[in-house]
Length: 247
Image 1: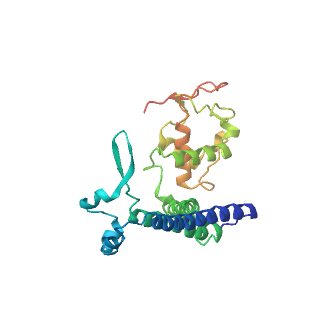
Image 2: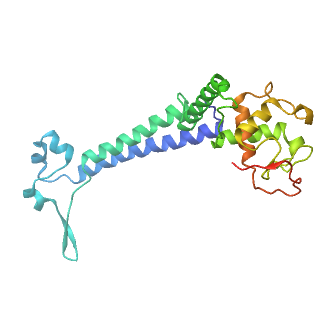
Image 3: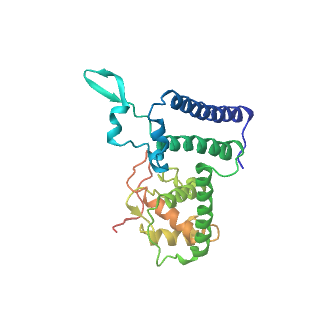
């Protein structure tokens, strides 16, 4: 549930009370104006049906009675007030605004759109994580493919930063391990080659097997991220090693 400090509650209450005052004043002014503009045709108006009163429509033969005394450049103006249906709609919006303000901003009974959105995103993320855990083992070195999903590449970058920077550099430029940004690879530069290398490691060259630390989906993500480093030419890149890989 949302929490508000005293100033926020005071401001919201002031706005809502202002709206309520505007509604009351408008109703009073409308009633006063009706009394001021009473005409000899009042008796006729009292005989109108509820629909005619609701819409505020006047028959054409009464147009002369609606004529105002003044003219502008020879143009005569009719005294046509705002239709009752429109005023009812206007009043209802004020009432709705007051109720809505108290319901959502003062009593905080329900979630606002922003909180509802965050809640739905959190639920979707949990569902995604459950799906990833359930189907993580469905990916292997025989069927793995490159993922271009932005979230997967972001996860892959995080995994790389956490586990691979020490040997391959923060930009893949190489260090103890080989350069990952050029076209030359020692154990193959395809997605399946990278997946296999990361999974099983190269123990004789000091690269550990990550299959016990990372699940197959995570290995796919970091492998796909490594492939995005191709051709970036970072400063201080290590000399090429292995053979040029041609997809």
